[in-house]
Amino acid sequence: MNAHALVGLGANLGNAHQTIVDAILELQSAAGILNVQCSRLYASDPVEAQGPVFINAVASLETTLAPINLLNLLQSIELEHGRARPYRNAPRTLDLDLLWYDGIEISTPRLILPHPRMHQRAFVLEPLKELEPELQLPQGPIDTLIKACSDQKIWLLPD
Image 1: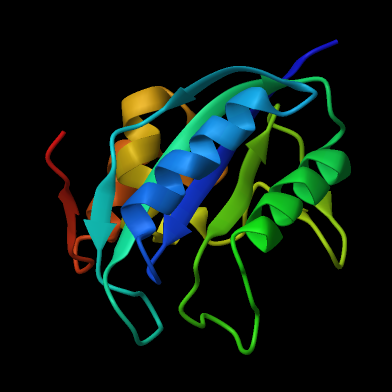
Image 2: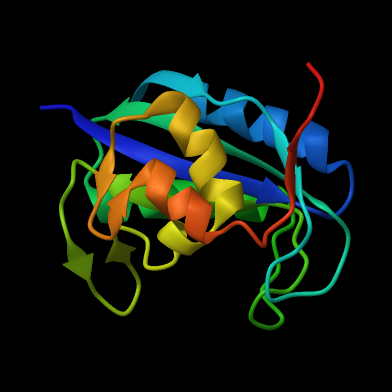
């Protein structure tokens, strides 16, 4: 049985734009991943962090993988792109966050679903709105949550 999952993509080191494009292609070709759709690319200033501007997107996909196996896949793709975790919110070559998985709630030391901060991040909510405008998060509708993030600067990149 297939599950519907949402993945946040972000990068702000190296050629971040190309890294996001490459990561989407890798998701599309990964075993257990079907029907990947991606938002347009956005840029945003770092939130609660220092460093260059981030390139962000959200991917919607169908998967045969269990949530923890999907997380393992996402983290392996990050590692292939040189992801390091020297400290919280450090600049990164690639960040792939499992945001949502079939509406289920999970809370383990390694995985929390839905993602615990996605409702506070305009750089997640704006691209998410493109793909899932009617999605209701536990904290409320996407449009309402975006308004609460109005202090975060985010802009759409040209195609």
